[in-house]
Image (cartoon, rainbow, N blue to C red; front, side):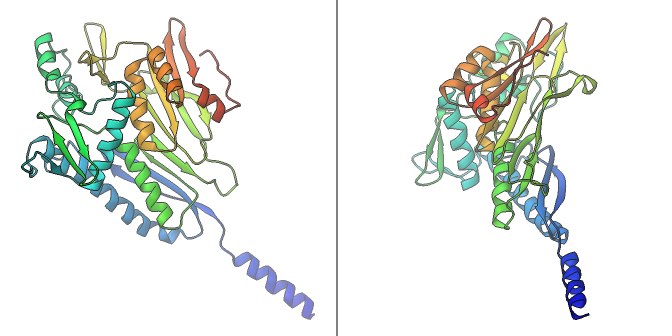
Length: 345
């Protein structure tokens, strides 16, 4: 009888133990939305985690949003921040970190990634200014190009400051979402969470695994001009890595049968015109993956894949052809995902 009581007590104790489950939070941010999933045993902790997440996102937006006229970046663009006698402008650690990553990609991509193309982005109607359905003329493009150039940005790591050799309009939208994903990943780890998936506007970072023991799975979208044409091109398990994708099929306008993408080539001042439909980068840093995806999207399939090999980047491309699409993958991508097999689409 005593043995039976002990067994029953043990069974009851076993049944009362909390089990791992997937906890979810989401909300609006950066003109899009965030989604976070993590593995835990206490869903009641979600409101506290969400409050910390949204406070961090609010801080990032106040630092680098171009849609907020009073953000730190907007004030820098407008010449409203204090300037020292020798031309240096003190900026926050957040803004400095993102600018530093952006300039690193700018150098390594041979200028294809340029966060100063804001005047051109706005001119073509893809920025915070009202959109357009008409291509600008050559004179307007030349004038906007004269206002760009990431080489005119200098950073001082000792003082977390920036110097601009000419007035610039800096737009960090091609790297800020990925960088914010990294910040939220750090926040979750600081809360003792080691198994999670963080996503902002399609840029994703994963760590650990789901309660089942399986790795998080990320789907790479098949391009299409309308939602019904889109599907899943490839599913990967990035492990403890980040995934970012840049494409030309979601944000564009057409005039006289010509399609104008939101991605601007800084050397021509015009939207890209090649056949690369989307490029996905897998990297330890979501911010770097985000920026490199844009740089390679500007480069196009041939030059972009050459850069990917030189920089040993894990890159997956979907390229238009006369019959639909075909895939390209870098050596590093194939190394990370040995079961990947190229398929004609």
